[in-house]
Image 1 (tube, rainbow, N blue to C red):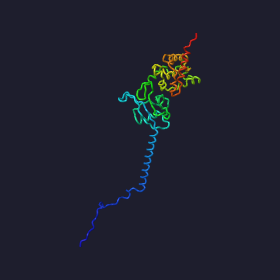
Image 2: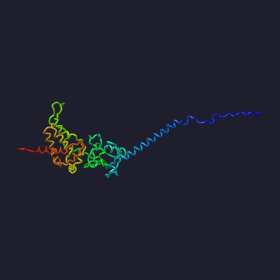
Image 3: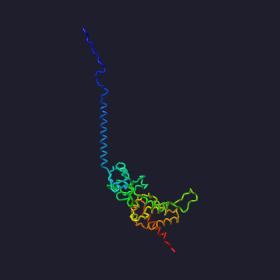
Image 4: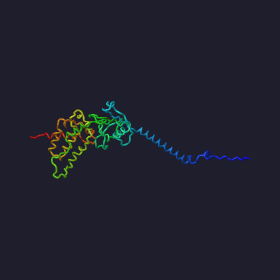
Amino acid sequence: MSTQVPQQTDETDVETEPDAAEEPSKGDLRREKKAERAAEREREAEAAENAAAGENTRELKVFRFDPEVEGKQEPRFDEFHVPFEKGMTVLDALIYARDTYDSSLTFRHSCRQAVCGSDAMFVNGQQRLACKTQLSELSEPVRVEPLPHADVRKDLVVDMEHFYDQMDAVEPFFDADELPEDELAEQRQSRENREKVKMSTRCIWCGACMSSCNIAAGDNQYLGPAALNKAYRFAMDDREGEARKQERLEIIEQEHGVWRCQTQFSCTEVCPKDIPLTEHIQELKREAVKNNLKFW
């Protein structure tokens, strides 16, 4: 009588139930759903912010010109829509447009504190400092152009060489007749004289006044309001003495000097530092008249 031996089964062939640890727990499922809800809320918030930004934008129409690039040699205006924030200036908007939309957009800027004078532009029909001009104060579209009556180099950048030549022509530096014996001694100035020249010292050489002057536009040799203001600053400084003042008056009395000014006050209106340029020019005229009066 034969006995049947039970067949042994290889352990590797035995099917095993899946490990219960591999299945996500209820806690894991809850955390996943919570993360999904949080992500959805973030997406909704981002969409709302984008929608709000789209509703609160400012439109800029910016002058474009590049003589070195074919196809851009014809002047044109490009439009940019910039998200608006409280306190935003024209310069902020231009920087955003350049960094976001077109890296070739070219303009000058430096200190962003209305001190360097490098970002003078023609904004909505008036010479202004871009870093000082608030977008909230301008009507749309905000039209940004280079300074008039100057050669455009590229986009909003103009050639300032002629302006600097006119400023240099009036010798804009202090030149005392006599120096103190002690080299460490101060050249003292009276309070009254300091008050007289104080406003004229605020010029930042931005060129806005020169650009606004119709006389300078028609007479390329006219010294211009900025240069005449600088001449005023030193001619009226009583530390230089009468001899040096006489030399300065001779410079500004020339044919293309103070007598070319027609007292239109356009330079005074656009000056970002509120310098009474026209008044200074008129006072130089009075000094020139007194200087030429002879009694004998």
